[in-house]
Length: 182
Image (cartoon, rainbow, N blue to C red; front, side, top):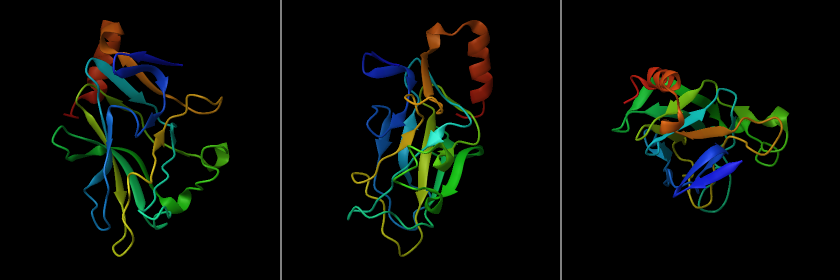
């Protein structure tokens, strides 16, 4: 269930480019350090993406064509300045592994995060789209990103909770999981 709290959302959700805490931009070929999507922790909230959460990017160029199959998608935590944090790679795979028509429907064709990531306010998770040189670039208007599944019986949702609703032990656990990610 998704619950609206002001301009933010709380509860079990999926993350997509329409959420207020997600920004998207076009990415050209051979621009590996330019994130296509930035997910930023929301004030007084904790965002948790568990290992095993569905990742379903549908990445297209300005003509609506699928990006080159050798395009690599990397979901990685970044510091507040936008620098990649090496130990926080949540997902790493090429578009050749995604079946755009079935990846949201067939559990056998879904791709999943490999480790759990927790974001506190102002912490960032970047989705890099590393497009091979000479290939068409990503058009953020023609593309879509989905992380999490709050509607099926087999998918993991992304969870957003109020920091203040966590007890002291949970707050300590979140601080421990996010240490070194500033």
